[in-house]
Structure formats: C-alpha cells, structure tokens
Image 1 (tube, rainbow, N blue to C red):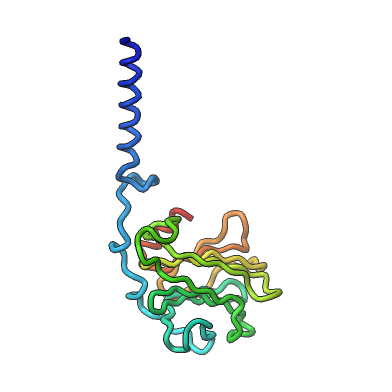
Image 2: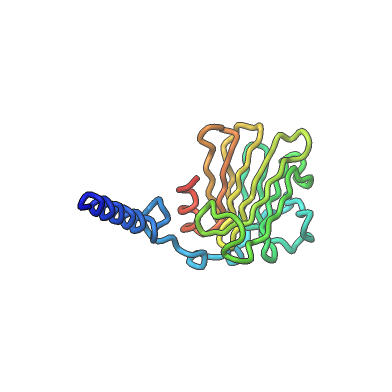
Amino acid sequence: MVQAYRKLLVGAAFALSLTACTADGDGAAGHPSPSVEAFTPLRQLKPVDVGEGFPAPEESPTGSAKVVGTVRKGSHRLVAYTKEGVCGLVVSDAKEPYRPLIDITSAWPTTDTDGSGRYPAGPYGFVSGAGADGSGTWASLYCGKAAMVIDYSSQERAAATHRSGNVSAKEGRREASSLTVVIGSEEVREKVLRQV
C-alpha cells in the first residue's frame, strides 16, 4: 500500500512539473509568447518604393497595393505587399519585370483559431504555388497581421541581396537555392527567424 501511494505521489509531482514547464512558455525560451497585438501590424509598416520594376498583382488594381518589402535572389525579385487584409507576393525576373513568375495572395486569419501557428506572432493564413512554366521557382506565403513569412526556392544558387523595407532573410541550411524571408517589425522578425 505504501509503495502504491509513493508511486502516485511521484507521478503527480512529475505531471505537475511538466505542466509548470510548458503552461506559460512557448517551449523554446520558457517565456510567455507575446500576443500578435504586441507587435507592429503590417498595415503600419512604411511602404517601399519599387519604382518602375513592379508588376501589378493580378488580384489588385495597380496603385492600391502597399509594398512592404523586397529582396533579390539572383535574377529574381521578390516583392511583398499588403492590401486590405491580404498579404501578397510577386516574384519576377529582372529581364522581364512586368511578367510575374509567381503571384500569390493569402488573407489574414479572421480569428485567433484560424490559420497556422507554425511561427510566432500568428496565426497565419497560408498559400503556396509553383512559378510559371520553366522558371523552376516555388514559394509559400504565411500571412499574419504582424508578419509575413515567405519560403522561396529556385534553381539559382545565389545569395539574397538588395533588401528593402522591414525585411530579414535567411538562406537555407541544406540547399543554397532556398530562402526564408520575414517581413515585419524588428522584434517579430527576430522571433520568427529563431524558429527557421
């Protein structure tokens, strides 16, 4: 009887210690995960001037989209924009800037339970797509109210250059042709990049 009581007591103590370690934290740092409201919303980021080389997104009329970040990877230019609760990504080739290779959009989740919780400062809407025939490109877009996360790959093995706006980029660990781009405030970019 005493042994059974000890086993129950040890089991209860173990269960309580597990709960205490994970209840308030985000698992990685052991600190409470800030809500999305703690970060600057994408709609409040300063726009980026892209000049003449920006193709009009298919889903929105020219001039109504607000570009919030750009990155070059080899001959491809990634342009991230927002418009009325939507995130968008246009990828074009420097040789033909007005012909998008990729043009994808995703809406912000409407509630905290919608979308993906893959990255901090979420939830995120998600979309992905392959590039135009023969381009060898692919992109996925996670769209949140405080951040956009873009996973991009192409056949080109070039480094990310010419960043503008509130942009951070991280080359793929296994493949030099892959790139993760995070757009948002400095705080949210740091938090997301820790999980990439």
